[in-house]
Amino acid sequence: MRIWGACLAILWAFPVLAGTPASVVESRQWKVISRERGKRIDELSGDVTYRAGPTLLKADWALKEEALSQWTLKGGIALERRLGSGDRLFAWGDAAAYNEATRAGSLTAKDRVKMRRSPALGEPDHGSAGRADWDDNTVTLSGAVHIWGPRLESWSDKADIVRGRSELILTGGRPVLRKIEGDWTGAIKADKITAWDGPRRMAADGKAVGWLRIPREASEPAR
Image 1: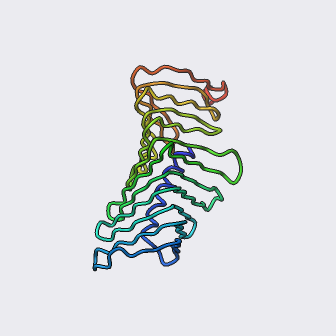
Image 2: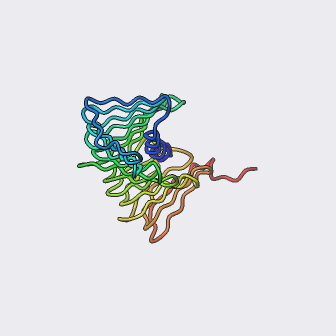
Image 3: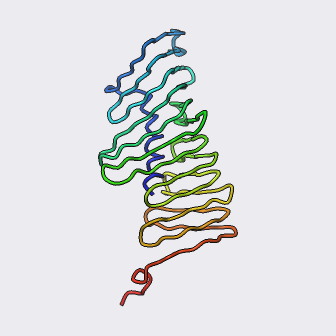
């Protein structure tokens, strides 16, 4: 379930926009539209780059509205975050918004929002969707959501990734989850598929169909 965790980690990197002592913001042009106290508006354009610790964010244009605690970004958005494990997380889109007060954000694209987790060793995991929305607790991917990697693959209209419960909920369009490797393999289709991590388990509700293959040694009772 690495890619689901990657979706959480990469999109929750946006709160670094609030700024830290170690952060660096650069752009070709920086214009202060309003200097009114409490209502300052900054416009950054041309190769906008934000660096803070392990996080790097790039965009063509950005607007910060102090009164609304709102960031708006457009064009060539690329977000990268390096984990302590050496894994690297990526997200790409064309427009983004983030509110520092509510800690809610969105990422959209003309074509597809794309995400990738590249481990230090092994094959990468990928995700794509029409858009991504998130707050402190949940990331919601919507619009022909496709998640795939060496361990599993899924298709759905919508995917909700719930932080506190380490839970993935696939709904819409009769979602499909295919497990490629592990202590069991199989594929299942249902109206709703829910998967949890720690301990790993899965539930399918509503006209569930599919197949499971469990190795004999895994299915035999302990003696």
